[in-house]
Length: 136
Image 1 (tube, rainbow, N blue to C red):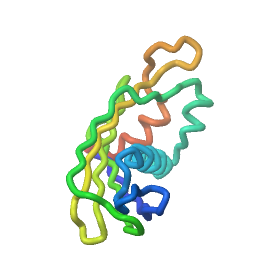
Image 2: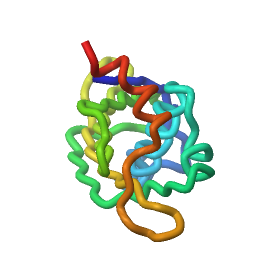
Image 3: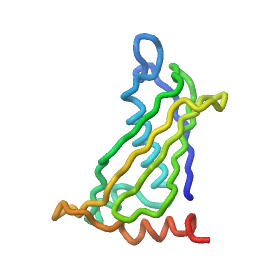
């Protein structure tokens, strides 16, 4: 299993009139966390795309448990529970500064050949970078 944490400070622009993080902002937080998790593996989305692969989101499930507020520092944990095949499933957990779980998300992406737009296997360099977290 691979996990990665990042910190995100809630900006005023991320909140609604009540000072609570707008539900749509969590999707952006998930994307930021996903990008940084992949970067932690020594890979970027750019490298994946330059290798001829796109990674579109095909499913998103979000559970809003408790509100997050303006100026809070959120810890966003990204979890990969299995090696990807044609799909890569990212789970996210959002915690406030007191360690309270605020939100969970599950985002499913697929690997698509840039030219044919058909499902594809993940790039070998991605699998190689993840193997150490899954092979015991």
